[in-house]
Length: 233
Image (cartoon, rainbow, N blue to C red):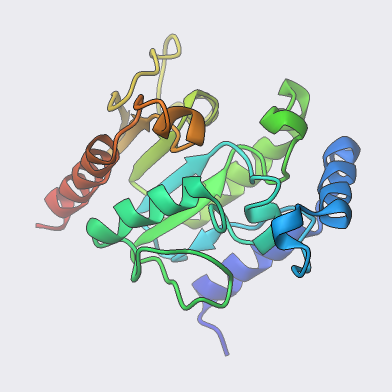
């Protein structure tokens, strides 16, 4: 029998996978899964909302934008099967938050340690751009994820994820005032020992142009480790 926390985590993930709130996104996920990319013709694409991934007792919560059409929408696991995931899991492994540096498929043996990954949107959107209404409909899943986890360090990968965490923090009276400016390595105190760190998203647009380097991403998770270790001492 799964432990109570793990059972609640699995139940939440089952609800996310079954979600049909955004017909445009469900149609897009299924269409991509049917058409496939030439390199992945032998894959049975996931093609539906992608659940959270990681440790149900995580103190570190990563928030991304949305699944990649031929990454997580193909493999069924957050940041798995694309170049963004290659960068992310390499950095998490260096910081001790992942048991291995690669994430290629759900059955590859990867586990997260004191870390979980969610997203502002759980369905792959056309052109990687969910609408504001679609993000609003998905916000409840982020809220339920935060309810379940003892997370006290949040890493927002990109500006949309940053805004999603800030909106949630304002709803819960963790943070008051204007939305703080998003820049790489920005930090916001969310009260009660909680902290938000901003990071450029490890998308090819950022990594290929040098806007985000490996050292920059490594520094984000070194900082997250530092904040968690401070509270544990």
